[in-house]
Length: 176
Image 1 (spheres, rainbow, N blue to C red):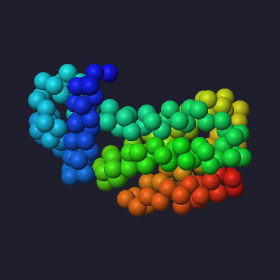
Image 2 (image 1 turned 180 degrees about the vertical axis):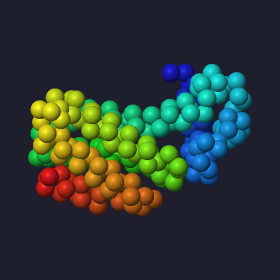
Image 3 (image 1 turned 120 degrees about the vertical axis):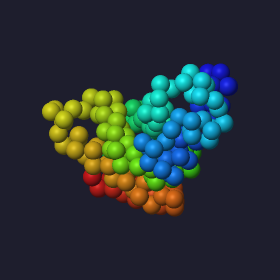
Image 4 (image 1 turned 90 degrees about the horizontal axis):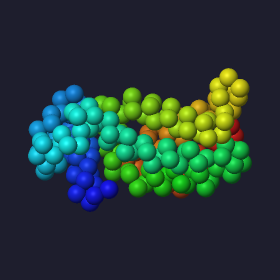
């Protein structure tokens, strides 16, 4: 991807997160976002259809890194030795901590976190051939672990103690 495109998308992403902390998503205008990102409206429309498209793509950026990791999770390994997987996911959180703190304060956080949980469960289940119909117990365990892990990370923000969270999550997974 061209450096200019990356720079523009990064500026829009940061501006969107800043604005989401300040106001509800339906109150953000293209002009306001462009001013904050220091781009013109024509540049915005080269990359996005509208504010909702921009908002969706910003959230997708946050989700993509986590979902890519979850699709590589071996469920049996996760049950017996969760530490490497949990630490990898928490590193992704750590890399995006400033964005997540801002995101947590936005009006779209609740709905977006629900979508993130569903996508992570789907990624783990799909990559391990686990379906609700055929593997009800394992599906429920994965759903429980994902929800617990995400809530254990999001709830205490802006305080983020990677080691404490990792130990707590690993203990939960081993119990489940």
